[in-house]
Structures are given as structure tokens and as C-alpha cells.
Image (cartoon, rainbow, N blue to C red; front, side, top):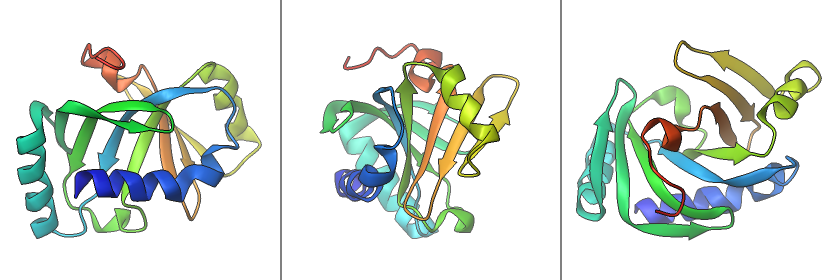
Length: 151
């Protein structure tokens, strides 16, 4: 089920994400359950194929035992989000590393598909269309958890 959601999301965002120059790799992906029952199923599957890294107010982070190859590199880190009915338009939201985060953030002023979120621990650029919801965090989530890309 988890890999199927990742594949659906990968196909869904392909056209829109190709508009962004300088994508280096996929950092991690948030998976959005469609109900409380779906969340429980996703967590149960994740516990079989990954180890828990952290539990946060938004969901549980898992490090996959075997990464999933994507167009943007090997995905090793996922988060199963708590059920949130405001996220039902998307199956998942991947985070990507980009070559120049500051350059990408300049698009916020000229393209309403981009938004900037500033938090104490991180800044995030959100890129949202009907087909995709993606993020570019600074610092990267894998850096915060000291997980090497492709590890």
C-alpha cells in the first residue's frame, strides 16, 4: 500500500515538478491517510518495512529498511501523517532537495503556486497545484535526523 501511494504520487506530480529547475533528490515523503482506519493500516505496514525514527504532532517518521527507487533517487524516509481532512486532494507530499534554495524562494513573489512558511526550526517553500503538493525545506528533514541520502 505504501509503495503504491508513492508510485501514484510520483506519476501525478511528474509534469508539474519538472517545471522546477535544480531538483537534486527526494528527501522524504509525507503520506496522507484518507481516514483513521487507513492511518492504522499504513502505520501497521510501515512497522513491517521500516523502523520508527520519531513521533511528532503531525505523524510518525519511519526509516525504510529497503529504499524505494523513484525518478528523483532512492526514498528512504517517510512520514505517515495523522488523518487530516484538509489533505484529501493529495495522496502524499514529497520533499525535495534543490541546488539553490534561495533562488527557488525568489519565485514566491512572482508565482502564486509558491508559498513560504517560516518556523523556528526550519523554513519551507510549498509548491501547490491541483495535481501536486510538494515542499522544499531548509534544512532538509534527513539532515535534521542525520540520515544520509541513499543510506
